[in-house]
Length: 312
Image (cartoon, rainbow, N blue to C red; front, side):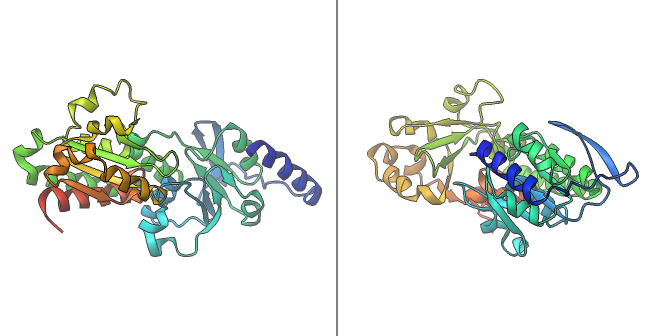
């Protein structure tokens, strides 16, 4: 689909805008940024930023910048559900990996940023429209991504402040949990709206990295299945739903997976889980529990205070 879109766009672009080229910035008007797909000279103070996925969207909003456009998610709950009024005025250029290139062009961006929303093919395409930067997509390195974005948009000090405040909240939670934190095992599951089956998240996932930094372990029967940092999740069949068992289970259900989650809840094996019998299963919002940046991380911390300590 991307290949077809590329040629259709290129044909229309050449036919309708044969004398239109992306403005070239002088060295005094831009900064050279090294990134995953090369080097790009970006505006000193970009004002019309488009982001190609919602992690960068959230991070920029946290840094005090509102992109002019973004994409909607395919399965997981949209960040619009979580960010609410902070999304006012932001346009959409399609869904992840299904970009409306004509809309993107008409918005006249001065910078395009993304992690998993940009690959080598559409990078060349986006670069014809505006300077484009591809950031590394590693779920557990969301703090590094935030700092990289802060550098790109001249908000490094803001990014550092946000992370300092976040670390202070982690320490407060860690202190409140006390010795319990050393024995506590927490499982994080997602019921996926696409493949209709559940999975558990590893310590290398976005939520897993937050729990790991706190010092909270995932169950040992899960840890044995994680071989490398690239293993962010393990998909489960109904027969292996026992792998979700823990002291506490957080379940993030995608909008398209609510019915399948009900089916699992009604199954006999689900009812045999200790965490279910102990009533320590909590449904959480997949718009911030599955992927995100500093705002989602703080929202997860809020949930941990609420469900682990009973604080609202």
